[in-house]
Image (cartoon, rainbow, N blue to C red; front, side):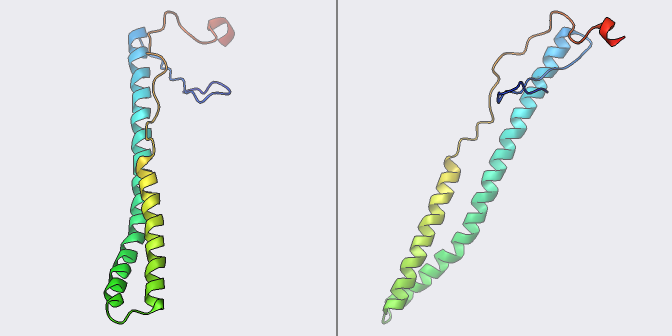
Length: 128
């Protein structure tokens, strides 16, 4: 795998016994990379979303408890605490929504892999 300078491109190549084998295996490597990258991105988003959800659940429980207390002689402290919790819940919910809306496209193949027409490399004279 090479990365041409000043690009976000990865170039996959494979040396095989035949040109068709080289093409097929380079394509398999590229597809495996894209699949792995997509899975890693989705796992990362899920982990972050689960972390926000873990913070959100206790806040929702506390909000529900404060709503029950508001009916029983509510004072400003309970109402203020409830308002603060609702703001926190809204913020965490927004973050979860933003994570779920992220583009998880791992990339794409710029060119279809093709079988080489001639050997590549420095050649025998240079290697000797």
